[in-house]
Image (cartoon, rainbow, N blue to C red):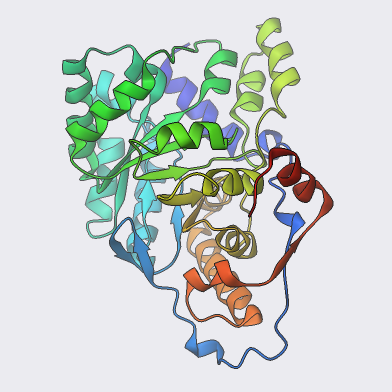
Length: 352
């Protein structure tokens, strides 16, 4: 099966409820209502920075797609919205454009339609593991140039690769390759998961190289479930996908795990379905949050700007109802945890 068909399959499946698996545990995070906030709603200022770049909200567009005509149209719409709202944007994995230069335009539309916001290039760890240093440097340079990237992300997708019919579960030597990526890029390096979360043990290893960790936790889009759905004629892939589709660390728990050992920039993603979820992520200690599936679905339905506006409004309301003016102040808001998240933290010896 061709990589271009796979990309379109991912778009349609990711936008459906079929791919939504588990819980991110944000319902276990209760922000304490402040009945006397002593601020006006108009006092709230969402502006912040994304790895040093000024942005208008602590919220960005997560990694989604690229490489096909449909993906190019989606990326153009996402980029226009990101530019309009002044928020960062990831692109999907750029490998397809590196091996098929004729589809570079599906990523280049991002820099054409969003010239001023921070754009994040995206490469996969399994592919990097198989490249020579010279090839890897070339890929990084091309990926950055393709979208005029402010930062480079490398995604860790071991669970997806081991289930995917065309998967490449090759992760030996990835940590050393990340160091090469950082040197070659000459800009911030983000290491991210894609739906299975990052533990404190992995975060501690990444501390020596990553400028940011994007937790990409369990509770939203499951690429394990997506690959199982794609494997219509492959009984083994369907079987193992069903077995492992709930595998991973819920996003809320993963934020706490990472924050317990890592002092860099933390990005929350995975199962964030509203601005209130985003505010909860910031209260747990994330510096930023992104959303993918809700924005992909909104794009396909022609209501992307309305969705982004709603998310931003929900963050502001959560801030008003907890009495804080700036996003970073959410980390000081009183909160209580439900029994599942509390049990996770206690058993892992993690404070949050």
